[in-house]
Length: 412
Image 1 (spheres, rainbow, N blue to C red):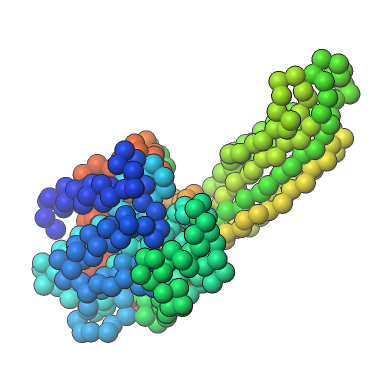
Image 2: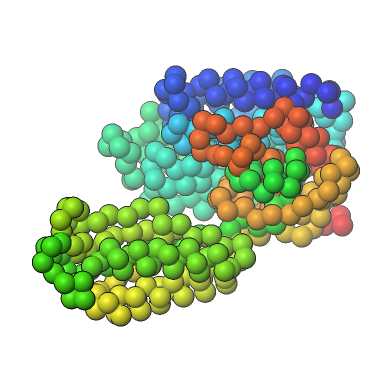
């Protein structure tokens, strides 16, 4: 692979970052003119890398590099091309661009492998427009929910209408699904979105599991009252109870390995400076690499919230509004990623991913693996998201080594 590969990758990431609905802030949302421009640009890079390209029925960009003979099962690589609002440049895009660069290197060497390679730029992973995530990868995995077609964006357009406006047929989404026999594995290179690799001084690492997640909506109801006239011992203050619950989330998750909990939203009612809060609603986002641990910690927290409310003579209502199972990276694939990292003279280090990825959908039809690339200060979903040229190149070298030495499960 040429020494300049890191610069080429970062240059292409910059080109994609220039395609935004807001010139001052990177925002590229599902089924927009910006998505079309980004898709066309990515397809041009795929074609230059000797790949046949197409856009599927949900808007995923797919490039295929045939193996030693046409029609072989494929090793699938990729990530997503959509962004959050006011996004960073590398989340998703680094994985797509790096995969294309690796195929380009194979093509330049005239190398054909005993399997095909497909690179997918998924159309929607973030779920910004319609509030539901991993639409592109769910379509490929055959788990797209047709009810999503009726979901509406902030302007009132349904997903079905948006697909038609984009030139796609909502009725054809089922045809985007792939068969398990067509895919040997799915491997995604992605920025870490956390500080672990940087702390350890490592440019890359391998992923052991993508954490599962629960989201809980909690309402604590007490009694509003005058801030100056109700004695402290007689108050039914919903906010002080909620504060105790927030700290319980923190302490419980600190005590558990590979478990994180966040209270990111809190609404106080009536919300006046001189009124004792009568009701508080707050959210809990709880993630863990192991589903059994996530479920156990969630149950413990719900019990603790109920106990806090009962002790204070308040009412607590808790409702799990979202549950997503963990996605383990399979050992046979992880071992090959480790081997590729070691081949580049880097100590292999495994870590779980607290963020969700398209692999969580793709695991329905393929074993999955991931490579993490170090990002500055662990910042992601933010304009300061950053990857060095050197780390981009190391990530590409590791991925190319993995591809060249890849052994499908049946061949092991």
